Amino acid sequence: MFFPDRTAAGRLLAGEVARLGLARPVVLGLPRGGVPVAAEVARVLGAPLDVIVVRKLGVPFQPEVAFGAIGEGGVRVLDRETVRAARLEERDCERVEEAERAELERRPARYRRDRERTPLAGRAVVIVDDGMATGSTASVACAVARAQGAAQVVLAVPVAAPQAWERLRREADAVVCLSAPPHFSAVGQWYEDFAQVGDEEVSALLAAAARSGTQPAEPARTRRPSPAGTGEVLVDAGGTVLPGVLAVPEDAAGVVVFAHGSGSSRLSTRNRRVAEVLGEAGLATLLFDLLTPAEAHDRAKVFDIPFLALRLTQATRWLRLRLPLHVCYFGASTGAAAALVAAAEPRSDIAAIVSRGGRPDLALTRLGAVRAPTLLIVGGADSQVLDLNREAAAHLRCEHRLAVVAGATHLFEEPGALDAVADAALDWFTRHLAPLSNATGRSGGGGT
Image 1 (tube, rainbow, N blue to C red):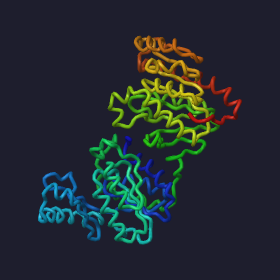
Image 2: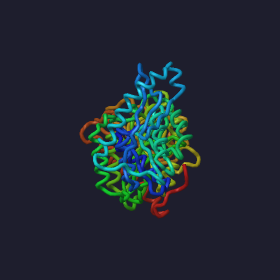
Image 3: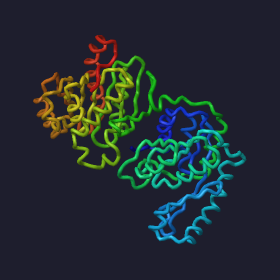
Image 4: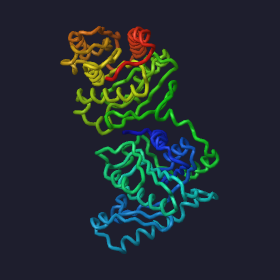
């Protein structure tokens, strides 16, 4: 799972933490990177925001590798396995701890300024960081919170190494983790913007939270949008959590799911432009990433059409549980082939499909089983893909049409080309949704 920045990650994380229904929570951010994430969690929960100051103890000759951590109140946690592997003597550990202890004593006053530390006794404490690589810092934070009287300790992070996540599940009362990717090497690899957070930013966030009080913000749209609205969502596709954006206008006539086989569907300017046009006309849209960041760099995964189709089917099931509307697919690249394969399943009831410069030829063996009306849109100057689409169209047995945008290349970057795509897609979807909506009163059909 890939996050634009810490604030966006915090909004997504907040929705999951809110589902725990914690009584009188206190949110503690791990300085410095965890505080912008924690600020969003505290805002949604309507909870006090503070910091829990701990310091990682790094191996002297490789400081980025932690052999333990220390925290306020004299708490100390050592990773004995790392100590042995690094062949550290007791005096080596003591020297590192002495240096980090001085920094530990300086920071709380600088962050809190003239405010007192938030009492934790008897409270549900949510410890938030921007990610976990080893879990050492989070582990000592849990110990510090318990030493200060916390009745319940919840650890919440957007991303974590799988081994760190498993370790902390034994130390916290609950662990909320949006993603534990198997190919984890560093927290920063899962953020587009992972700029360093300074002490002043931490202080400003704490001060702003103190001024705002503890009235809870509207949490629903970060996790489960209301019948009308737009929000970031986490799509559960068979246990894989994928980021997305769900937009639901009032009295939506149906929902269009965007399937992009490579790169990020939700961040694609072309997909977002088409989604905007559809939304203005009263269609709900879901833009989400079919692949995790690690999978997106694997060319075999990008062209694994059965895998992409299964992922799309799983995401569609997730969507139907939240939005009872007829579902359409808008596919691009290999995502178009995935949409056609998903729609070819015997129990599928997809209302309509549009392919933009897609590769339906990659679904050739399944095209005869597609029942959803299908529109193939190709640029007139995209000669190779145009030929592949003509070949695919010859195998379709459902209602279908091949629309050629004159002069357009593969990415439809020419003036007016993308508008032509959006208009054609809108016409196709609305034309095929209208009789379904009239017959069923806008409610969606069964699962895919």
